[in-house]
Length: 79
Image 1: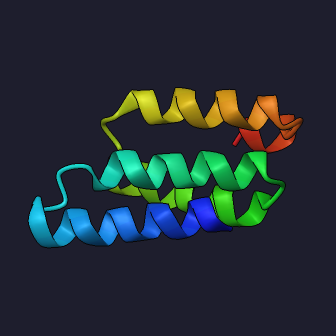
Image 2: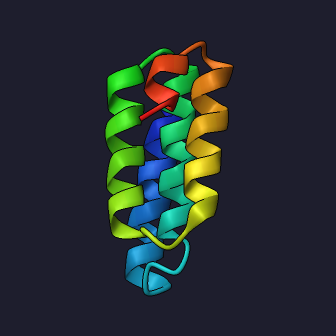
């Protein structure tokens, strides 16, 4: 939970001082952390939002699939 708080603080700091230039990367880290921590629905929701907002970024699809397979969520990885 502390790492999630740090990531949330980093996103807020990035928004206020860096025009959210690192927001996608930080949010991606949060999604992966949630999935690896067993919070599947929360992690999936973040990945879904990231992918919807960045449809042209094929790297996100690969990272989502890789992370889901790593946490034994093959069915969700097929979506």
